[in-house]
Image 1: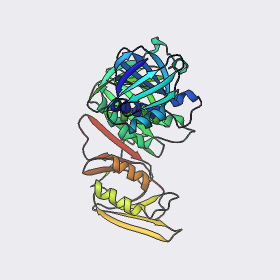
Image 2 (image 1 turned 60 degrees about the vertical axis):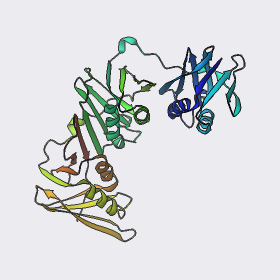
Image 3 (image 1 turned 180 degrees about the vertical axis):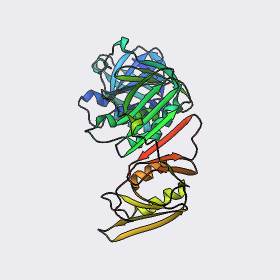
Image 4 (image 1 turned 135 degrees about the horizontal axis):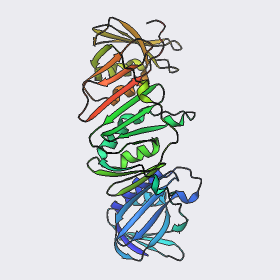
Length: 376
């Protein structure tokens, strides 16, 4: 078996596909890529048994076809150092000895039988739940706006991923760890289908990194997995089992007091004051009046404290409330508008964080549980 391929094109595909491979695998063969050569196309596959990513690369001077496995780390490290030029792979189909040739040198190593590489588990074709095309930008925005709020508690596995709540008119992405919740609705394109699933963090991160924002993706949703295809990549990922909490019940419907403040000024102030919080709880206390927001933090263990004041516009009289500085920074950083809106009801109820104005075809809402404040 023999073929010639651009080192840059092969490195780009192999580097992206390698992100699926775990640092430690139960099966040694999962440390390898599966290379499949058919006609003038080389398909590179990587898997961790839960997620499988394939990429296609055009090749030339093809002689023969077949499959073989090759050490992923070694191939990626080699291609990274090669100049941008054509390289030739020669594979002995009997011994699986692999020789890589380029004008400046030759590299030799031994592959594994491609038939030993695990394949995706087949699902019942009658169980197809949905199939549609949507812009990749819609997926990227959904993941970017929610992934920071995903839970990490193994006792609540349903919260360790992003909910895709697919409706005929759009997709709502939701993530929560019980302390904060993000709901992002996008109607840029209409899937025309209705279903939902929970995507784990790892495939969500891989997916947003492999798609280009200006392309369309094809999604096939099955009972236990989704297959998302672009021009170059095909990605299959397994869902998290279980039911996601009813997020609409958690979101307050009556927060009468509205706080409007400059987003960047608040973010920088919280970052500065956050240096002085007690790392055990990260509490920052806020005293909010109609025209001013005063924030305080202290760490009694080291006798440190901080205080800052910002102008604001608040429709209530006066309120003292506490929030975790790290969570607050994550939420404020996710917003992009000049000013932000915080809707409050009382110090024991969650605050609702909103952009001053939603972007076209989207709606972003974030919720953060307050912390107990004894005195300001």
